Length: 273
Ligand code: ATR
Image 1: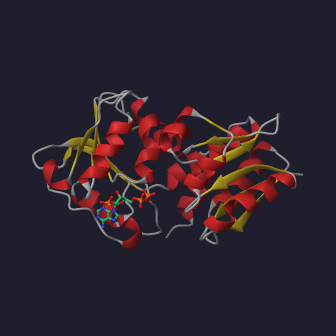
Image 2: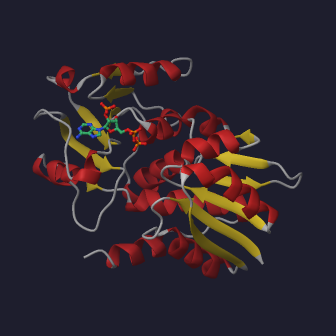
């Protein structure tokens, strides 16, 4: 049987096994998908062992995405620029391909599931860490009018913007510099949500009929989703749909079949409350 798994630490609460099991049933793929608690120090050994024992593909999550990037024998362009890999796939020639499906998962959730089109929009990304880096190229490819990265540590925003400047000019600034500006779409890619915190966002930041999206997700509204509702955002979304869509892209890379995501998202939504 073809084996797949997600590696990470912590890993117990990962929804990936559920999601991939539903995809496999739906598309009648004979495969198994497990979880393995893997710390950074064990990563290379664990991956080698997995692929030596019939493993076909892996998802890697916190804190392993940068290590997975370094491990891969070859990488897609979006993974290359993300400097992080969430999906490893065994190739016919035995090499390991590294991809990053987070950004395309976000774009598909925004555009296909929620009707939020990026073309010609003014997009603000909060945060300049790994999560931000992972989504920039797929967002750029949708031809927004502008992309702005705001971060607490301005130097990190400038560096990140610089890494993509051969593709498109990105504005980089601190939160204080946002005063007086407004955006059609605000994406929260900070890790602030995880500790129920919020970056210092000024009022008026969200344009009329603008939407907000938190890359993190939780059973209850994140601090950013609550803020978005207070701003009367047209849509105040969290990253549950992105989670399912990035999994669907990984599944497609491994199996060559695109599963329907709507029933899976619906099921996970129903389990929230
Ligand atoms: P990830 O891989 O999740 O992006 P990371 O690389 O550690 O994690 O980046 C975390 C991001 O969240 C950073 O942009 C960080 O801002 P700094 O670079 O200034 O540290 C941001 N962040 C975390 N907690 C925050 C908070 N309470 N308010 C604002 N930004 C926060």
